[in-house]
Length: 114
Image 1: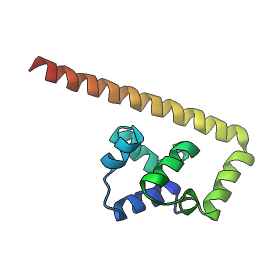
Image 2 (image 1 turned 90 degrees about the vertical axis):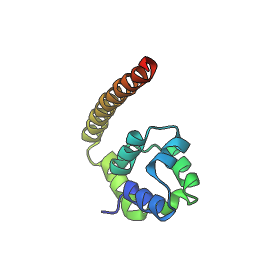
Image 3 (image 1 turned 45 degrees about the horizontal axis):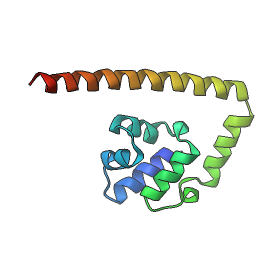
């Protein structure tokens, strides 16, 4: 399936932008941005609008009818399962952010020692 994240990646690469470039524009770290391309269910509407502006495209170009049907199915067919998956996804995201913070603190401490 051609997901939103995949469309964003293809468009970003076509425009010659790195994940780092787009991440900086969004105020994210590169690993956080990379997760958005892989796990597009984390992309909020606000963030999707910002990404579309950066890539000089429209949100409607990033979301096609098939994707919209999947989003609607996730939200209506089994709402409790969808909510559980979002909660678990958020927990995983928080844990990965904690790991990034630890990594960045260690990196900062190494520079302070020099």
